[in-house]
Length: 198
Image (cartoon, rainbow, N blue to C red):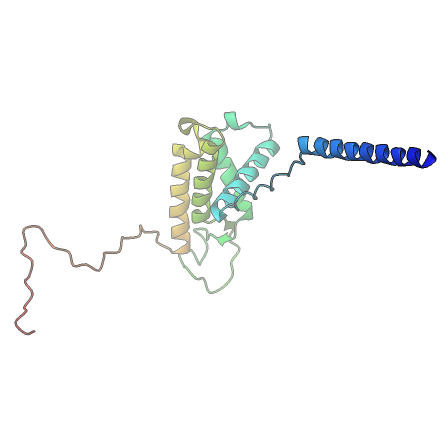
């Protein structure tokens, strides 16, 4: 009898553990493990132009913060942009000869002189182009863009002309290269190819 009770206890334990493991498995099947989504790819690297534009915009923002009295972008005018461009001259690396310098008008002076270093016209022109685009990308309206004012355009033209005279460099518009195809004037007959030699 004792053996029967032991066998019965083993059977009930076995069926209970089977039921428990089945219910555990059933429980796991109801809630499968969630697989985490693969990490999103990093944003594409900015182009050289976009990186420079961002740096220029941040520099201009810092200039506005340090301005005395403090200046907000919405109150910024063409006059403030000219002030910013003149401020940048202190970091320039282009020698601009004064009219009283003996090397005025010489593209490659033979000796050093005390003339000031300035921002090159090409650098300023490119900077204004990037800031003009950044202003509009950051919510500014083209009609109120201080980087596109007439005063700024005139200043850039003046800098270009004065630096050209001082350094003896003529800035000319680049002419388009003509294609290798011969041009045909209107109402002119095309020359016929002579096939008699072949």
